[in-house]
Length: 141
Image 1 (cartoon, one colour):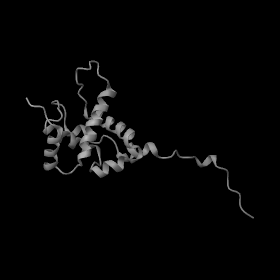
Image 2 (cartoon, one colour):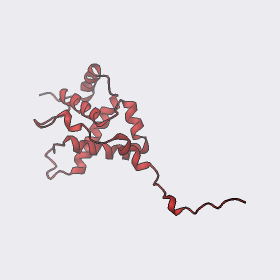
Image 3 (cartoon, helix red, strand yellow):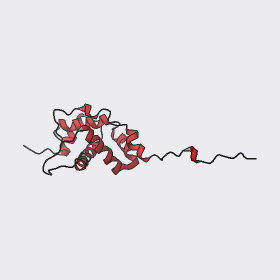
Image 4 (cartoon, one colour):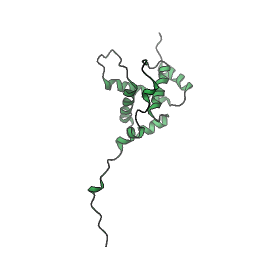
């Protein structure tokens, strides 16, 4: 069996589905590697299957590390606006034999994973100061 060439398969995917930028596919591959390392593998020769929810968390962590507060902006530029979009990218890659799936895997695994604003902007918002700690303003004469 001939090895799958990522670039060739990606060109086929992009010819059939232009919703997502090519960089999103490269990022997903990096995020999958990050997720597998984070989860930890008992045997380095055995590939651990990553669930949709595990992958979404890995994507979130990797994006925050790589792009910081710009993660959501980068994803929007790539056409990725919600967790379900990552599921579409995953299943495009599965259809072109770049990823494997189990019988239990489905696009629904990515439905409602997390809110992008909360996941990617929330960690960078300033902490709220309580008004109770501020002194009462004195009237000016």
